[in-house]
Length: 121
Image (cartoon, rainbow, N blue to C red; front, side, top):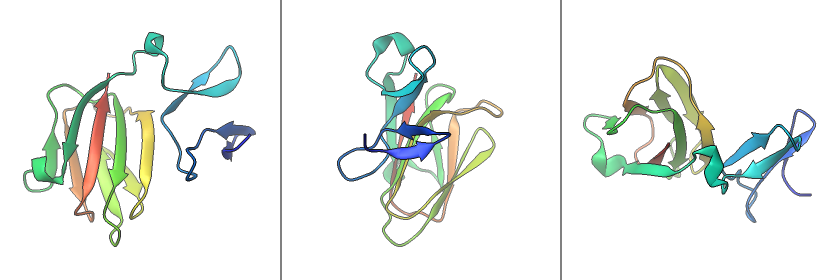
């Protein structure tokens, strides 16, 4: 099995070794790709740096699940979502995950100049 070990389990990766969107299947005791419509993980909205106003992306709905790709090959990025800072190295993804904190509709970006942010529901 290929993947990244986390808590004695392997998280799923694509053919290039990047983490893919996934969830923990409690019943099976393993990670599963986000392809199960019963989990409520549907892409709602995608934003890029061209949608940002002074380093802030604003989504239509409150953010509960997020996925980030820092396309900037030189600069690391800090993406603040619901008051939580998410550090994403240059040229790397931050796989889809649930996000807690003070729920809101904005993502504030510093450092990175090229990125894609996906919101899931």
